[in-house]
Each structure stands twice: as structure tokens, then as C-alpha cells.
Length: 129
Image (cartoon, rainbow, N blue to C red; front, side, top):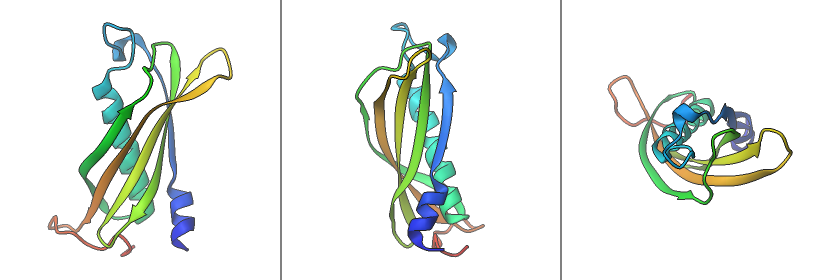
């Protein structure tokens, strides 16, 4: 399988309904909750790409462009954007969608860096699998 085929195959999409128990006093999704879900989606995409044990080593720039209100649907899209020998980067976009219309818009974008590790927690090639 080519690298591009692996990238395409590992793209990960998760949908979440934004309920009041995940929102702040402005009735929008907590930033920390968004970041946690983004890291989870990025981890899944990284693991699906490499089929290795992956750990998050950094979150590079996360841009909160629009608030995510309660009562909307949030789509988390994770896609590998860079591969090195032992590390890779995954961009995660959150797109919000109104429940009762077709309107969609990008709300948050962030990038996460992962390293593949062996059973001794030492870096290994992401292409070993």
C-alpha cells in the first residue's frame, strides 16, 4: 500500500452531538473538551495509519475560529499530514453542523504530533507494520 493510500484509509471521522453537559456558561462546548476529543481522533488516525503503539508528544497550534453551541452536531476529522521516521502529524478539523439545516462551518483546527513506540517505550519506525 502506498503512503497516500495509507493516509486516505486512516482518515478518521467521529460525530458528536453537543449536549448541555459538555458546555460552559456561554452554552458552547468547553475548549478543553474539544481538545480532548481532537486528541482522541488524532490518536485513532495515527494508529490506523501506522498500526503501531502511538503516543501524543505535542499539540501544535489549535485555532478556535468559531464557538460550538449546544444543540449542534460536531464532526471531528483527523488526517495524517506529515510522516517522518518515528513520528507523524495529524490535523484535526471540527466542523459544526446545525441539527435542522444543511449549514456547516469549520470551527476549530489543530495539529497533533505522535511518536511510535515499542514495548519498552522507545521510538520505532512508523512503517514497521
